[in-house]
Amino acid sequence: LWAKQVGLMAGVDLPVTPMEHHYFVTEDIPEVAALDKELGLAVDLDGFSYLRQERKGVLLGVYEQNPKHWNMDGAPWDYGIELIPEDIDRISPELAKAYERFPCLATAGIRKWVNGA
Image (cartoon, rainbow, N blue to C red; front, side):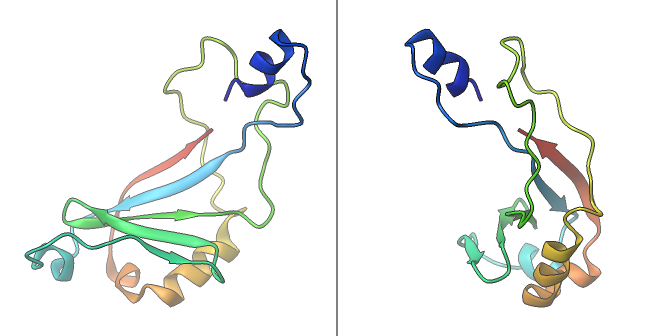
């Protein structure tokens, strides 16, 4: 988050900027809850998404094909755990592919959306 500012302290103008990143966590999914071991990470490179177990549900994150830069000058020094408002319309192409690849999402409720830097 602060690479640009730290680089400038060393006299280097790094061509980097924080990016927004979306993910969501589902409610419990019966098939996941019934497992006696934790699922591994699943990455769909063609669909720009990843999925991993989160308690008795899953966490799904997307790598946006058209990512949005967040604060071109780098994160404010006092930036902490604040979240950025979700922009679900912007990531709908990636979500559509993820719902095709991971059918369990079709009936899973969403517990929490996160968009951070």
